[in-house]
Length: 232
Image 1: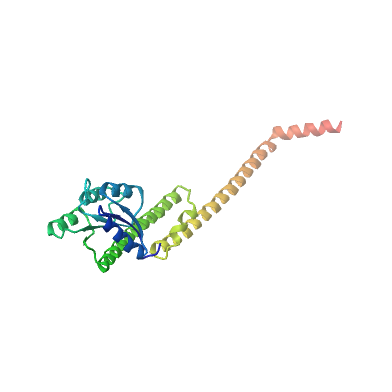
Image 2: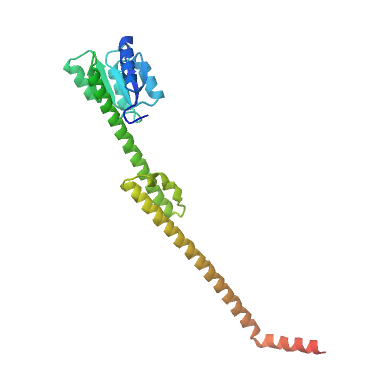
């Protein structure tokens, strides 16, 4: 999906409005899903990912206000851009939508230029939010990598995705990978030196123990006796 297109959900109980909005949005290159009332719209929102929601205000059973409240109370979907659409043009309705967390308001019948501007603004907000989430997630990878270095279980590949970024965070990840690999190499070299030193110490201890035995009068006497036995 290109930078200018998105998955849009149109929730409207009027079939003509749904078709008009869907056709226009599809001509603009968007992928469109529709729902004919608030309850059906809420079910689609819970089941599928969307970038922008066009939500009618007045609908039977569950109206747009209720759906908007549910969205803003849901941690997983509260940042989803919502554009309220309605034939109501009174200030109270607009104010209520904004207070409930709507991002924008579009009057019926919609003007294509205005709709395009509203949709593009919604897409931009959604993309910005997604980038922020991705950034925070990748910062978490760097933090986890630092903890892994301390615990001696760092995997250089764990930062590959972050290191591909062309910003400051990507540069930090690349530097961190390099430093962590240097630390690991130094630790390995130190462990090898310690291992070799232990071997030398063990050999020295063994030689000392042998010398302590062979240099005693008792051992010399045994050697003399052994030589005497061999000469018989």
